[in-house]
Image (tube, rainbow, N blue to C red; front, side, top):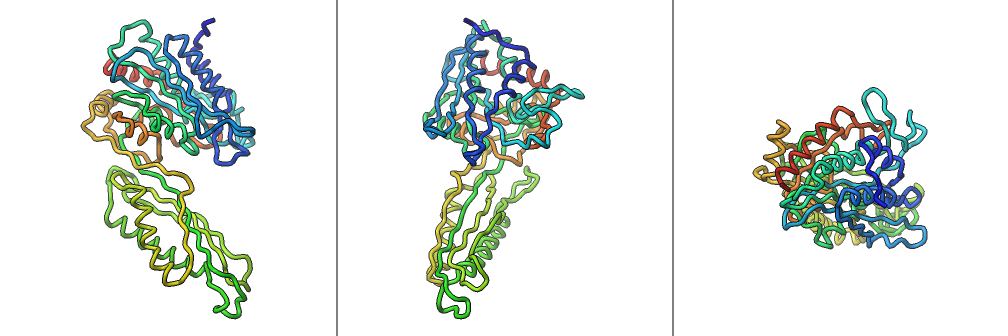
Length: 389
């Protein structure tokens, strides 16, 4: 039995009503299957070939939420256009919301709901644009892609790269950009440094090896490294034109009268396009090795998550030029990370472009401006005509 496809409000209301929080905390982490299943039903009804791909990194063991990607394809061919979004949201503070976060509420020409702008709202827009081409003969395929866990591990995008699909020539990621295209964003690294020394009585420093004192030297070196990076790398397209390195949190020791035996530092590094995350990790490890040898102390480095490479789509891409002409805006740079580097790794020219503002994301009373939705639909139709017909 074919499931009728709701109107724009009905689609977003159903998606918002399906909780799909992804979080590094198992207590808050949820499955995204309800969202995936809704999209699959609607796209199947429109004639798309629909594939649901469970996330292998999420095997669905007891207590582990099941996650999946969705790849829905209309038409055939070697090229084509991907319209991509993520199905998960960040956690929410229900008591801070004026409205029910899981009921789409219209007020003051806005639609309020968790994920309304980041970024469940893109899927109804993409489906509504695609609906106009159902029954037409496409020369290149139109692919609607829905991923899992963008807000946490990016396991959905990582699995796409591992599988080498979908294959297409162009991709639009519908993150909220106020309908202004973006072709660059910084990478994202979250790293840990643990120093293991030896505890002892504080009255005699020779009885131990103070990990906290060694970490003081490590932090000094990291700040020197940051200054060197910022002297070497600069990109005026970004609001913050240089790579950043933030010392986020530190934990060490247990009492004033004990030599600190272990200390751990977490830091965040945001590289510019052209800076490789793995090379940065290697450089940091090399810089700290002499310190470890001199102090005869153990320094361990690890990544808190695999990280996201910086993203840059060349300005001469046909997709970039088309969206710039269509919107009247030059493609700029984002201050937040997306799945764009993964789609680029799959060989697609990629632009980030969608309705809504990132200023409304990740906070209570998240909303999308209704006035942006029809223009977004119309612009996606233009892209489909250009790259699929």
